[in-house]
Length: 205
Image (cartoon, rainbow, N blue to C red; front, side, top):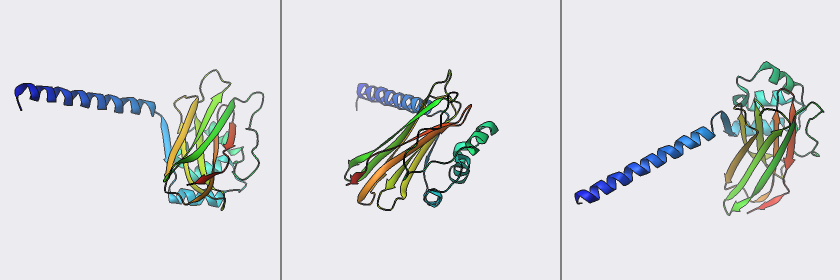
């Protein structure tokens, strides 16, 4: 390789490295303050064991997702302890709202992406406040409609003052069958507000 070729290659390499580092930095900024969880086998077992039980939102979060509520205020926990957990398999109810309560809207999405993948996600969006909520949470459950069990779950929370948060996941190689996605999300403070949504059933593959 001649000198000019060496210099050109070096400049190209440096440019690519700078571009890569910039991309990583931007991604890190976008995820600042966000906690994401793809449910483990143990968490999925707990979710299905608790499904349908008369428990509070705080009970659920402490048992299944303590990582999402570590360090949140006692006032927020008190509000969560006063609200019942919502479950799939029941008629969807309006979100917990009052004249004083900020609004929360949840959207569930799910579909067969290709022969090996189901894409599912949940988005929670808050509104009706002067400032973004200090904490927001959303969880999406991939439901096997034959068994009624959740075969996967993904969740996300933020305490970085954002209006909306999405928890997406690609489920690889699920069993053949019919599925739906149930999503639920909430803000716990200054007033509790939550909402739920579910998709129609869809076939895989």
